[in-house]
Image (tube, rainbow, N blue to C red; front, side):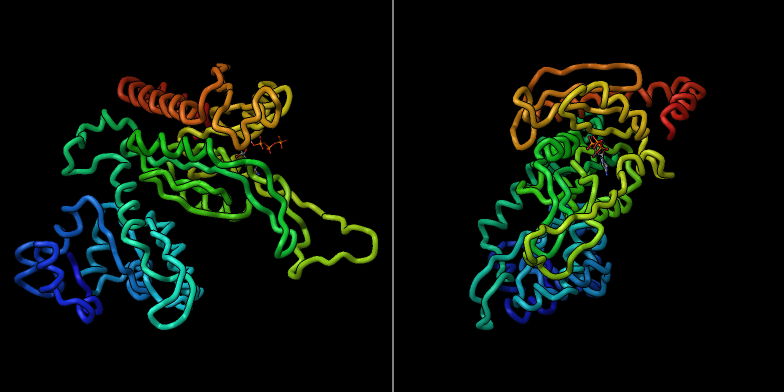
Length: 399
Ligand code: CTP
C-alpha cells in the first residue's frame, strides 16, 4: 500500500496497514523507507498497480509524468500494468483538462475503470463516483488473466512460450463514424469483433498490442492498450502516434468518405428538397502506413468485398503496398461476416493464395497470429544465417 498525503487525511496509514497486514509506504524522501524497499522496487516487484480512489490531481500528475511524491514516482517508474479507478466531483470528471488527461493515460496503456454515476458526497449527481469494489475486482481479474505475470506460478520466463514477446503489434478495428451534423453520422456495419479477436490473440502470444478502435460495443481484451477514435482522420492520427510497430493488422472498416461540409447545428427539414451531401475522400490509413518511414516489417490489410473477392483483394494488396491481404466476403448470405461470430477468409500473400474454412472469428484470429509468429521466426532464421537474403526480402516488402 502506498498512500499519498491527501489519502492520509482520510485514512491513517496505521488503519490501512492493519487492514491489509502489510507495511504502508508514504514518503519518497524517508530515508528508512527508501533504504528498506525503495520506490523502484515498489514499482517493479508487483504484478499490477491499482490506484483507487484516484483523484483528478493524481491523474493529472500521472498523465504528465510528474513524480514529486511516492505514489506518482512509483507510477512513473513501473513497467507493470496500471489500473486507475477515479473518484471525484462530476464537474471535475467532466472538465476538459480531466478529459485530456484520461485520454493521455489511456493512450499510455493505462486502464481506467470507469466511475459510477449517481449521487455524490457533495450533493451533486452524475458520473465520478468510485466504481463499486466488485467492478474494480473484475478489472483486476481481467488484467491478471491477460497472462501470468512475473512472480505468478504459471509465468513462462522463456520467451519461446510467448512467441511475440518483444514485438509491438498495431491493430485497427471497427467502423469509423463521419459526422454530418451534431446528431447524424455516416457509418458502416462493422462490429469490430474480428479486429478485437486478433488483438486478443496477439496479446496472448506475448506481444505488446495497441488496438485503435472505432465506435464499437466491445470490452477491451485483456492486456491490450486500446485507443478509441471516432473518425477516419482520428484513426489515422492514432495510428501515426502508435508507430513504430513490428506488425500492423488493419482490420478497421474505415469510411472511404466524409462529408465536406459538417453542419455545426442540427440540419432542419427545409422545404421539400432533402439536402445533398457533398463527400470528400478520407486518408487511406493502410496505404499511408505501408509507405511510411516507420513502416512495420509486416503490414496486413483486410479486404471486405461483396463480389470477385480474391481478384479485388489481390489488386488492393498491390495498390496499397501491404505484404498480406486477408480477403473476406461481407454482407452476403454465404458469409454475412459483419456483426456475426463467424468468418470465412482467404489469406493472400505476394506469392500464395490460401482459402481457410469458415470458422469463428477467434479461430481466424488465432490462425492469423500463428502465421505472423512463423513470419517473424522465418525472418529471424534467415537473418541469423544469411544477411544478403534478408536484405533482399526487406527490399521486396518495401521496409
Ligand atoms: N483502409 C484504410 N483506410 C481507408 C480505407 C481502407 O486503412 N481509408 C484499409 C482497411 O482497414 C483494410 C483495407 O484498407 O485493411 C481495405 O479496406 P476496404 O474497405 O476493403 O478497401 P477500400 O480501400 O475502401 O476499397 P473499396 O472501397 O474500393 O473496396
